[in-house]
Image (cartoon, rainbow, N blue to C red; front, side):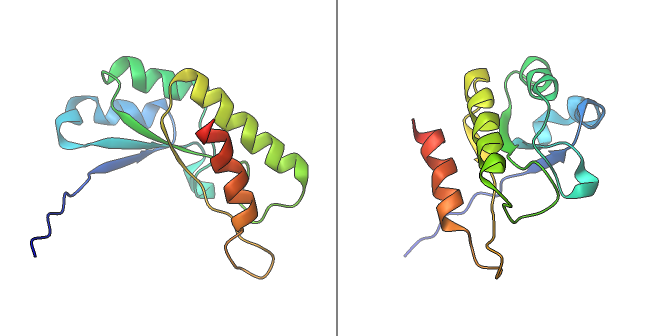
Length: 123
């Protein structure tokens, strides 16, 4: 059996200033994990940051963080609505890849919430 693996080089960025640091090194990375507020673990980025990357990097792949606060536990249905709205906004802008993960109060994977978000992406 032959196993072929490819190392994906990703730059995690939190704003346009971070992106500018990589503009002369684009040949060294494969994709951006596009976020905001990295000090909080990464939240949903701004539309402006996403578009800047598209325009300045010849549409280098981006993985869009979908997260509204520094908690991995969803407190209410309004949070899920916000997350869905964020996904729809970035889909309209041309995003193809997203990253998110949520937990239940007892620190298990919140499968229900994750499925709801995946369903928005699949449409």
